[in-house]
Every structure is written in C-alpha cells, then in structure tokens.
Amino acid sequence: MYAAKTASDVGTDRWVFKATVFKSLSSKGFVGYGDADPTNTSPLVRGAEMRVAETRAVNRALRKAYGIGLCSVEELGWPTDSPRPAREQNQSVKPPRPNGSNNGQPKLRDRLCVLIRQYNLDPTLVKAYAADFCGTPTVKKASRELVESFVTHLATTAKENRDGLLCKLNSYAQPVEVKL
Image (tube, rainbow, N blue to C red; front, side, top):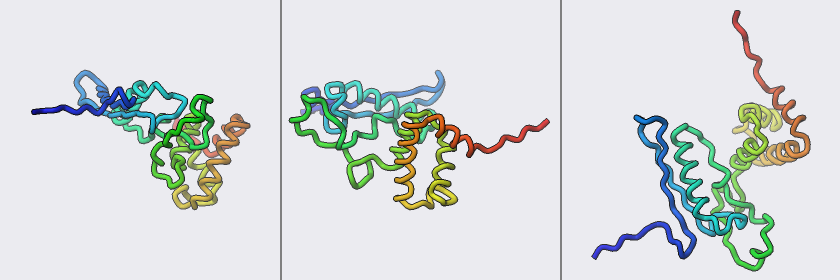
C-alpha cells in the first residue's frame, strides 16, 4: 500500500508552498520553498499562515533569481517581548526558532537589514558609517558590542531624525569622478 504524506496540514495550520520564478520565457526556473505555522509566525498574522507561507516561497524564489543576499522581513521572526493582541495573552505560543542567535532575537545582521529596508537607507553608506562608528577599518573587525551599539544608535536616529541620518550617511558617499 502506498500512502502519500503532504507537508501542509490544514488541521494544524501548517502550510508549505513552492514557487518558481522565470526571469524570461527561456530562462531556467528558480525555485523557492516557504513554510508557515503558528510556531514560526507572529501573533499579528495568526490565521494567515497560508498567505505567509506563499509569500515566503515567492520571496525566496525571487531572491534566488536576482541574486539578492538578504532575507525578507517575514523570515526574521518576531521579538519575544512584542505586544500581543488581548485574545493572544492567555495562549501559550512558542517563539520562533532563534535564527542563529542565542537569545531568541534576530541576528544583528538581520536587524540591520530590517532597518535599512524600513528607512530606505543605502546599505553601502550604512556599512561605511558602521565601520567609522565602531572605529574599525571594516565592520567585520568590530566587536559584537560595538556593532550592537551601532544598530541601536541607527534605529534611534532613523526613528527620531531620519533627515539628519541621511545627511550623515551621504557624508560617506565616494565622490564620482567625471571624465570629460
């Protein structure tokens, strides 16, 4: 007897999707898979796990097709101290997988990527600012504490004075040489 087992399970709100992106009619397809269930989605989207899984699959396929090395916001999980709707307060929900950090929070790199997207910042300029802020030639040479401090500083500055932050970031732009 043959029994097929599917990855999606409507009864437990677990969904798995596969998306394929074609850059042109004759191109090779780029495949991305996305899954979602109540343990790896925010309480804010509870009940919409099917759509979250689909979005994750499409985002992954698009990132593969266009060589984008960042993950999407949907994949970063949710902070364990995030406010929950009143109907969720009494239910026990497991936090998402820690995403590589040891405290249940997203990685510093992921938090930085979210800030860059959220405030539409130039990643190259942010990287230069981070190295200068940390007092190191590159961000990779900075200590974790310094990078954490920079991410906190960037979040605060972006929220309170985005225009000032953009001016600061533009000071790190390399002058373009014009050939006549």
